[in-house]
Length: 163
Image (cartoon, rainbow, N blue to C red; front, side, top):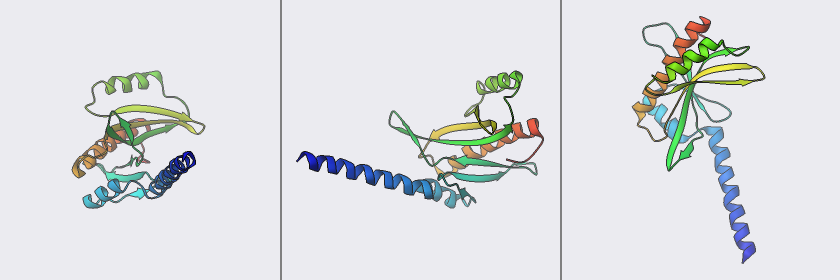
């Protein structure tokens, strides 16, 4: 009987891993359906995340946003992250910029500036974390807001339209 329980638990684990791997390759079907209903063009990365490029209103600029497929749970609420890179730097930004981003974080209605470093450089990005089950238009508004804020910083810091 004990062997059956172990075998059952192992089988459930294998099925769960298979489902996770399938979702990673195709992305979260809820996000895919929402983007398609909204008529937004998107790409799916190898990790299953969605990228959407928005035309920024009142400009000739565009900005790419990533909508993560993998979600996290907090007290029964499923949370999804949306982010956009504003700058890729060779080294950490000046202290003045870091302080400014922290000050902006305290006044923004949703989302925050973040920074990550790896062997290729330092990335400054804007991110927001939202309930995974938002309505279609809400996903569009959240992701456009992230694009708009990140694009303003990209233009100011780099003067480019690379992201």
